Length: 430
Image (cartoon, one colour):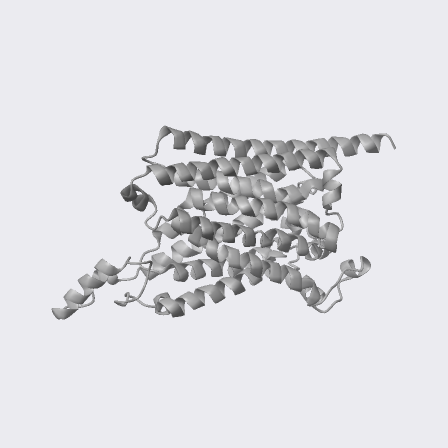
């Protein structure tokens, strides 16, 4: 059976929520493999992992799933038609083709990329659970509300995308907004747990769990990152005509949204590459991609190489070979970074699948995705003992925050069920 025909195409919000949870698990845990990277600066392993996230995986998996009813791989064919403005599906619906079709998805992808570059810093300063929780809180609100507003104001988005007025004017939409409010409440509770942790934990414990823990700096970075990272929601909405073209080519709707990631993540790669290249130049870390040993004087993270450098200098002064302490495990670093990058990509692989199953309320996908990420990121933080040594109050707060976020996903699922029941009843009366 061709891959494109492997799944049913009808709306199924329950299955959609499951897909979003799988995507959230991937996003919430992708940073874990980076913990296995040794003696590479942050900008080095972030870019290596990003190359897999934003170039290799979108190209490979986009090619893999974009098959028509005959089992033919059509990603290059459809992109060729879109670039040459010869795609019959979009022509019939009077939608733009050619390079103009890709401008907004690419630019919004770049916007997200700027937020994504600093997203890694938020975890670097706050840890996995709190860093992702704060950044994704902002990302949740801006990412969910702005696409419907853009649809109403500028007409950006798919033909079946709801505007903000449609959401406010329907029962299901109103329940979805309640779910968003509950999501925000859960994020606030989780942030409160983080502040309690900051006030209670001894400095040594903070540094043990998160070596560069800095609440004020991390909060500022996470705010900036969260607002700009919402650009991914805008990019996915702006890329909906690409999804339409693949549906028209016979690609199953379950997979049709995945090829648009090729353009969106190329934009993200562009801004991340620029930032990492700047840091390579500023910190003199560009040599680490190919080097077998660290150079004394090169930066990993602030003061992280001081002891290693002193040992190497003492050994060199005594006429010895370069210290083994400075050897870079290149193969394992590459494998861990590739695993982190591929895991990160799968969040939007499953996001696209989940979105295809959410029916009229696919705009709620963003909130479900964000809530799922925070839940699984916090669980990873617990596993890696980022919350060890804190008071009962802090543990109760983080538990309450996660429980509230889980409840928010239930509310949004109910909103989809309400909307479906309303539509079914309206059809029966015709």
